[in-house]
Structures are given as structure tokens and as C-alpha cells.
Length: 537
Image 1 (cartoon, one colour):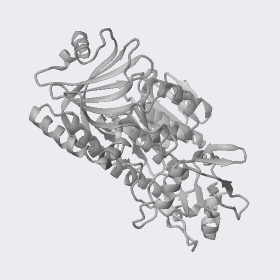
Image 2 (image 1 turned 135 degrees about the vertical axis):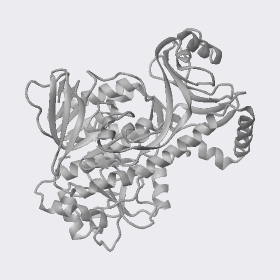
Image 3 (image 1 turned 45 degrees about the horizontal axis):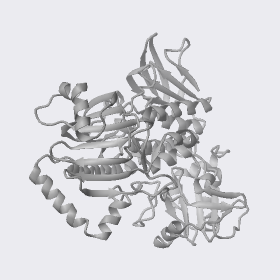
Image 4 (image 1 turned 120 degrees about the horizontal axis):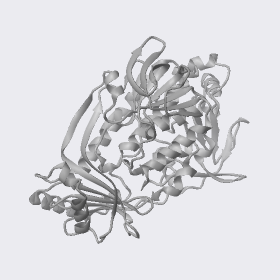
């Protein structure tokens, strides 16, 4: 990787993908494309990483993605994993509570907090592994001209104007995205009337060890443990208060002292935010795409802001790689919005509902909420549903030409990640499926035997991994694995899983059957039969 803080003294090299924005989503897209050997330029208007702890919560999909690009070990020491989650009323009584297991069904911690500047530094350092990736700080995109075969970006730098040609452009430049305007996209949705003060502070020796939502009508607030000796507090702005008043250090200290037992705090960052629930009407225009906050803004109550952007990154990156490697036509890129937008809209609605629990400032409305939740908590099934984090839907994608048709509920789910065993030891299942690699997985059967001759040929060119769990292989290239995971076994039985085709982003594309008929989802990759070499794992 080449990192530059100003315009190069020679003209910028043409690239296959230009990424606008060096936040966590843009850097993740760059790592994914770099792993595929794609020529990438990351353009960032600022002179360096922003270094602000904006996002704070991760989910299992984000950690799985860090493992996929080989950087999980670099971020793991700085994670606060699986804190208790509590929603409390004004009297301190529990309205909702969740306690996540140490390892969820996707092979990672399901919920926790992190320090965003650390994430960004790890992602930036990760790009040093790839000679095909270039990061250009101090490069602000001002215009975009699209052609049939490429896009041309005009750029302002401290050394003067420059331009860059790219096959595709990905806008990851945040909520005030310039790329969104250049692509003619608009945000559709609503903006919350309420504004929130967000405070990151250092508190020596604090004992904040859970995520607490205080649903207090006198002033709703949130308290989260952060990395090191940090704590994050969020306070809702009340009628009559101004932003200047809220950001006054004396008032911030007063709010913390009134709501906690801590008297000495060192304020690191303070900001007043307006929360949005808005999704772009188009995520692609020609050769340009939007990802992360540039494509969607959501309330923070479900912790899906940055995490949603990470899901965008992996969904788009493997498809761009497939097109640029010649394995598929550009038509597969239309599946990006089809698969991601419905899930994002559903998550926005989940965040809205959680916000409706937290934010009432009318005491009658708050009392009614408390009474309703008290009744619901009398149900063991309701408590179990909330306790396992059931409010947030499991990972899924919408249907597209890259998923099987029909009503099979298995298709579009994320593949579970149990621990499996070989003669060499025990490993997470993802150990055997590389970045940008397809997998066929059979349970008690060699999945290769359930593929047509056409599909075997296509998948061989794509560099497929064939796995047989708890069975004997019939083809020498199939890997035999053993698995005794009870939760995985329950999932297999519930969905009657015999064999499945798993995409590079770990979502199930299709169920395999004994008829071994051609899979519709692989039709888009038929041209890969003309490509000599498979994707490098």
C-alpha cells in the first residue's frame, strides 16, 4: 500500500476501483478488494484518519468480517465483549434485559463495544499487505464524469487539481456524502425531532460494565462502557435547551454527576446529534455505488450504523471482484441494492421501535410503556426472546438473481459458523473458506455429487471449497470435517439441511438436491468457463 497526504508528483494511476472516504466502511471495502488483487485508490478529503470515536458498538457479522480479512486478532484485544444490556425505567426497574452468550451462532461475540479510532488504524495498517492499494489523504472529489467503460473523478488537492480514472467508484463518504449528490441519489425517510448530546469521557477506575438505557421521562439517557477507562454517555436534549448550553463542560459534568456516582471525569469528546431514519433511493448509478452512511442513516438504538455499512462492504466487494476478474457480467451488481436495501429498511424500523421505548418524556406515556412491558415480561417466551437479542433480526439478504427463487426460508440466511474438527485439531468453519471463495457444504454427503456437470465446471473455475461434514467424501477435492455442535445440529434439523451453496459473503445462495439440476444462481457466472484461472484465495 502507498499512503500519500498530498497529490502525487506524477499523474495518478488509473485504477479498477476508486473508494471515496477513508472511514471504517471505505477502508473495509479497500481491504476486501485488496485481498482479491484489485487495483484500488482510496481518496480521503481530510489529511489523515479522522480519529473520532463516533461508532461504538459491533455485532457478530462485523467481527466475522474482520476475521475474513485476517485482522480479527488485531482488534480483539480492544473489544469489550458481551456486556449485559438493560433498559431501565425511572425507578430503576428492568423493562428489558439481554445477556448474550460468549460465542453466538456465527462464531463470534454477538455484541460489544470498541474504540473506532483503533478500528480505523487496524484497517489502514491492513492495507499495507496489498501492493495494489493506494491511500490518498488530502484528496477531495469535486466531480464525476461517467462513460461506458470507466468513470473520471476530478480531485482537489493541496498541490492543485488532479483526475483519476476508475472502472467503478464506491462512495463511502458519510452522511453528508458528496458522492450521493454526484450520483443523483436522495435520502428518503424522516429525521427525529429530538437531538442528543453524546459525551466520551475518561473516568479513572470506573465500574461501568453494562449497556444501560435509562428510559426516564425527566431526561432519557444511555450509558456504555468503552475501551480502556472510557465511558460514553448520551443525554437527550430537552425542550428549551440549545446546543451551546448542552456542550458546556459545566453542564455536562452536572448531568454526569446527577445520574452517576462519578465526580471526576475527563471529557474527551462532545457533540450534539440529530438522529435520522433515512435510506437512499438509489445505491447505484452507472459505475458509481454508495455504501455505509452515504447510503443510509439510522437511529443508534439498535447499534447498526457502522455495522450496516460493514455489511454493505462485503456484499458489494465480492461482486465487484467477480466482475473485474471476468467471472460475471456487470448485471450482478444490480443485486447490491436489491439484497441490502430491504434489510436496512427493516433495521431502521427496529431502531425506531427501540427509540420509542427509550425516548418518551411524557410521564403518562412512560407509565403506559412500563405497564405494557411489565405484562409482556410475565411471559417466559418473551423474556427468552429479548434475552437472546431477538429484537434485532438475524443476518439476512433480500432475494436477487444471486439467490435461489421460491419460498425456501433457508435461502438468504447467513451460514452458521460452528467449530469443526480435522485430524489437525478444531477450527471455526470459516477457516476453510477463504476470502472471495464459494463453498458447497454437505452434511453426511459429498456435496459435489449433488451438482450438475455445468455447475461443477463453473465452481471449479471460481475456486470453490467443497466440504463434507460428518460423512465420507466421494471426490478427492472434498474436505472431510467433523462437527458435534448441538446448536448447529438443531439448525440443520430445523431447516432439513442436506447440502447448500454458500456465497463468498457467507450467505446461503441455494439448497442442493439429489437431482443435481443446474442452479439458477450460477447462471450469472457461466462466462467464468472462459476464464483460465480461478480467483486467488
